[in-house]
Image 1 (cartoon, one colour):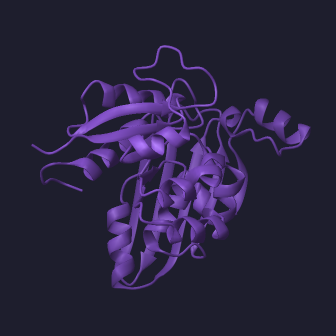
Image 2 (cartoon, rainbow, N blue to C red):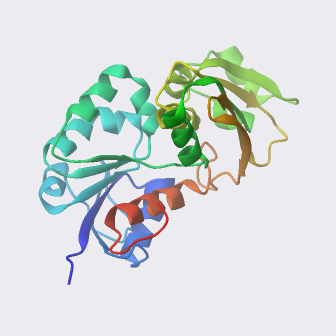
Amino acid sequence: MRRQCRVGVLGHGAIGSRVAADIAAGLVPGASLAGIMVRSELRDAPARRLSLSAALTECDVIVECAGQQALESYGEQILSSGTDLLMTSIGALADPRLHTKLHAAFPGRLFYTSGAIGGLDLLAAGARMGDYQRVTVTTRKLPHSLIQPWMSEKQIAQLEQATAASEVFSGSARDAAQLFPKSLNVAAAVALAIGDWSVVQVRLLADPAARLTEHRIHAKGTCGEYDFTIQNEPAAENPRTSGVVPYAVLRSLNSIVAQSGGLI
């Protein structure tokens, strides 16, 4: 009988709490929840609190659900210990220095999750066939979910008082992922899928009528032309992210620990 894969969850917010609960409930075959890594005390959690040092000896895989700063602080250490790392905050890889550092660390393996969008497998396959001439990501979200610490009081007021759709950002995927770390991981996902940050352009719209979070991806290249739209329910606990994200993380984890074949 194959040994259970011991999983640690880094972070216990809107994403991490759902991921931890489902692992503890046995909903990821082949995985067991070793513990949860958080800075504060845990309440109503399905497993004990683990220190990072303990997790590196007790876990086979650590699932990051704690944000880009957590990857900056702990990612290299996790991978260098031989523990595999499943990233949720993949926008962190917009930083070329961190991207290089994490991909150079071993013997642990680095995995990404698809998060709030689909079609990444097709985009990646197309990139193997040839170059993309143009890739655009247009995201539409509720204005208050786009407020950032770096914004001026005027920018914040405009978002809080918005009555019509307006453009908040237009530029590169790299800038988008760094300026909106909890809202535009999708831009990073597309750039990583096609293997080219420079070709992906992003437009972010604040729309008070956007009940659903919308991502539209358009790509044109040697492989053909693709145009697809995703509309997700925002997470009830944190409207900056889509409600489907923890389930995307769980699906990615299932692929890592699966004891049988299936769609990956």
